[in-house]
Length: 269
Image 1 (tube, helix red, strand yellow):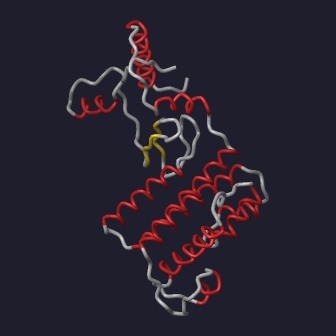
Image 2: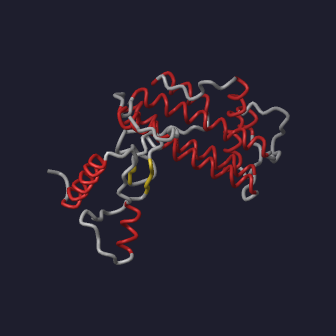
Image 3: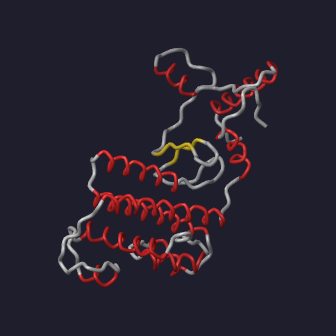
């Protein structure tokens, strides 16, 4: 009832291909290559019967959990196949890009800290907004989580753990947590104070040996270390969020065998 004629035509084409594969009785993969179809249309070749167009949204992604492809408005959202959030996937891609730029010399270490911590803040806030919209709570608490900023990473982590049993610092040592706290405060200094230390930084960062009004200098080692810790924290958020809102298991389980090579002649379950 809710499918377009084009969608129904595609389903029919898919079913014909499935029956063809069954009738041939040979192990292998049978594909409707939509990239090839798009190329044919662009080249003014006769369109396949099942071809149809829909309005493209802003972000297309292949889900890292199930392989399903989605086209969503905005940047972050749920996979339309299994329901996995794509925030972690988007964040890890951003961190990989930042690391590549650092290695190639296209970005300074202090910019890595700014960009990486800002990317984590956006990622974490996306989870908080989802929790605020899906978990019953008072309006005051809802507003708190909808507007939460992660400048005080330890304070936010404690509040989130207390409210939802989501532990984004799980597995981090005391030294790693102290380092992350310092780098979150450094990001604030780089963004809002041109790198010059203020009284708040001295009071809250735990960074010793630094003087008031001193300009901070960042190292590549610090930049790489904080990106590693941020990925750990984001993975903890994703894991515990989906412990509350589990994705669909079947498409993920179906996709997992495709992640490992098969022995020659073996068939998929």
